[in-house]
Structure formats: structure tokens, C-alpha cells
Image 1 (cartoon, helix red, strand yellow):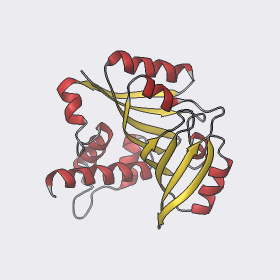
Image 2 (tube, rainbow, N blue to C red):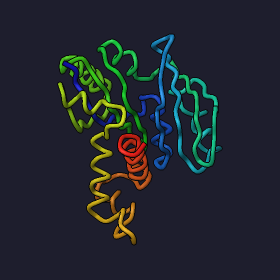
Image 3 (spheres, helix red, strand yellow):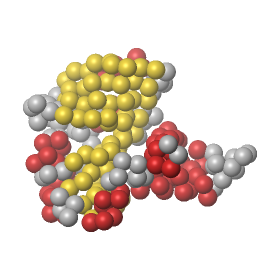
Image 4 (tube, rainbow, N blue to C red):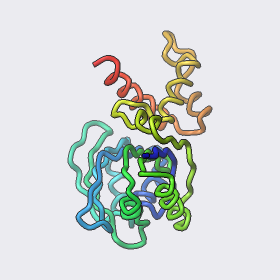
Length: 215
């Protein structure tokens, strides 16, 4: 019976941790990750930031990054291929693979990673959680679900708990009304996150709903 876990994790020793801390308004969306060498995984990440030159200077200074290449860019969005360094970086990839975990969704902003993962069972999740705690990672659990609930949450177009929370709050507060009765800053304050993070949650959540119910 699989287990779905949604949580937030933060540490300057996680990959891209220093860059996320240095640029609070930066948003990083992990598209995919693989590794020929599990100690040096390669990430394909979409970033959203207003100053690409400053972002790349921070990536150059980021000790968790060995090298990066810019693949695609449009406006403030850029797709990077990033190779993680092999020194003084938490080996999260190796650990979740060893525990049988699968990364489903990962969004970085305000110095934190918002993560959705699937594990074979509670014991394997507990093993990964214990590892993160032993490495000093700040960890905040949002949701655990198993069995049928985990399967539904893992469907490609299902909302994550954080996306659902943001969309419901925005709807209740009149964000989607014409004219709007509230703005992103108010919703962000209520959720205690940045306006950029709220915008990303609403955008990604609405895209999933459109895929599921419109297309």
C-alpha cells in the first residue's frame, strides 16, 4: 500500500538551498531529475526570476551546484540543466531512491522546497524523514495519505493540498470575482507565504483543473 507525503523542507545544504535563500522571490520548479552517479544527480529546473544575470551569479556562487546550462528562456522564465556538486550537499536523491521513494512534484521558493512524494509504506517514509532530520533539515509535514486516497492524489491532474488550499481561499475571498474583492498580497499574508508562491500555486492548480475538466 503506497503512501503519499506532502511536506516542506529547507536547508542551505540541500541542492540550490543557498540560491533560494539569497533570492527570496525566486521560484524553482523541478521538471525532472536523474542520475548516472547518485551522488551527483542532474536536475532540469524551470526558474522564474526578474533578473537572470543576478540569478546566474548566485548559481555560480552556490556550492551545491557543480555546473549549470541555460536551455530555454522566455521573459522571466528559464529552463536550466543543473548538476549537483558532490561535496557538503545533503544526499537527498540517494536516500529517497534507497527508501523506494518517488518524487512527484517539487517547487522551491522563499528558501524552501515544497515537495510531494510517494513511498511504498510508512516505514520507508519514516526512514527518509529520519535521514532529513539527522542532516538538520527543517521539515514541516502537510499531509500523509495512503491506499485509495494516495492513488487519487497521485493522478496526473489532481491538485496538491497546498494548491487546493490556495484556490479555495482565493475563491472564498473573491479573488476570481469581477471586479476582484481581494488581491494576491492578502491571500499570501493569510497563507504566510510570498505573493510569488501564491501566484505559482494558483497557476499550477488552475492548469491541473483545466487539464482535468476542460481539455
